[in-house]
Image (tube, rainbow, N blue to C red; front, side, top):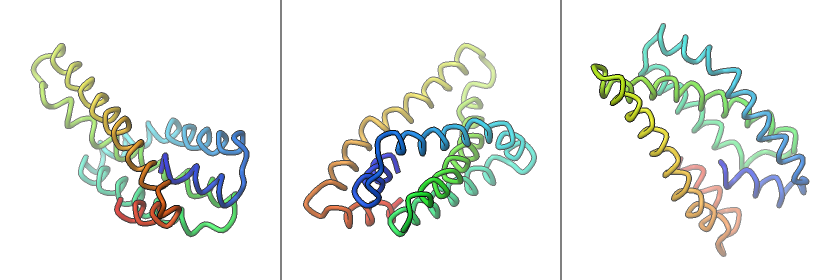
Length: 149
């Protein structure tokens, strides 16, 4: 979504960079506000439920992006996507913490590893998906990439 949403907003809705920034600000705020409830859901119903629910909502919401017909709908779609990120991460993080449950120092390294893997995915995946979406296939390629998520 980090590559497809800006293309959608700029090419189809002619949004300004400020409007685009507001979408990401709303998404970050939603992720922030959902972090504690997401952790409670993961604790109460289990990690797998949190991960599967979060990833399912992320995929479903991401698939709606190419079909949005109004700029305000992008914000409406991006907020649940961001909440779903929080829910999925609330399920994933304890798995990394469990890798070294017996050693606090090693546990901090495993949590750092999780963050590094996520960042590496952004570093490698974003340029590749961005190039794919901006290729001669244009926005239709972005649609296909989104549906693959």
